[in-house]
Length: 414
Ligand SMILES: [Zn+2]
Image 1 (tube, rainbow, N blue to C red):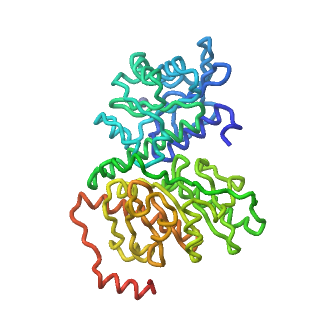
Image 2 (cartoon, rainbow, N blue to C red; image 1 turned 135 degrees about the horizontal axis):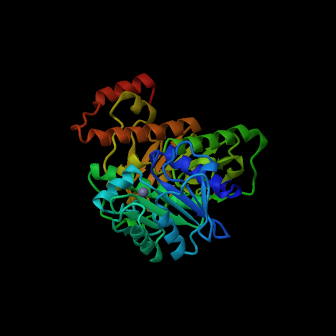
């Protein structure tokens, strides 16, 4: 979708997105795109990032001529430097998202091997030494990181810079970095990461489903539309990001629809919907084969739940009755319990178990319907957030076994 737009339109769209996702303030952050003629389009300095339009974008021509009604961002020197040292980079994104700033002021880089697949999404990260904002000196320091082959630079006491061949890829890397930082902060409030020995060999929990040649059936259009809406909603609620994670849904006649991983979740549409071969190897397919009562499956990596997954902390849904009613007990599954075998993972679910935290891997949610699965994921993430916040307030007092039995009776749970 973005490919069809002019550089100015792309910059406006991505800037709005960064702002909407809480990754920049009104005045902070700047983006640029270099076109095939060597023109560099860049966001202006000192304007409201929340209401920016295409007319606000400034163009710096190869001869140095500046065109536009504003001045270019005061941070343009480092953009120029990166384009100078790296021919393959055509888009640059910079902002100060709070979680990344937290890392930058303690001068640590978030663990990007936080779960398998994240590193592939981000690439390698370097740290640029401190320099005054907008200075040539800072430009040189950031340029040095990029000249060394890295596409991501964390800036000491400042923020994050990402470069890529196109703005959407740069944005996804940026978002993935920010979520690594959010996961790392949550994990540090729990009990810290599990020793990373197992991490290296672990399974990549991606959408390795087999696609069939079947096309969407006209009678399923409403269901596919709902699927797209849920994916967009999950993105807006920060349950999905950077093209990671996916939802699938089974129609009454057994056809399973899904949206391939890597799709831009914010702009997902009916054209992105695919039919899944349930005889295939993927985790979703195995769950559908084994459980006729399950009609929706979600794989996700939301930051608060992932803090539990990467630390191996036990998650309790016995904190408020409404949470227990939605998802009953949540299970934690160590990698050794399934070793990357979809069938073994599918066995973990039953009528009592619909949410699984896969240690160091990700989150799987199942339900009889799409809306229920989405609700369970959202409730699980909010609960994780509450539990992490509660760590600093004192020990959590769980609902007792008798109180849980009462809830089960009242709600006719198993
Ligand atoms: Zn900055």
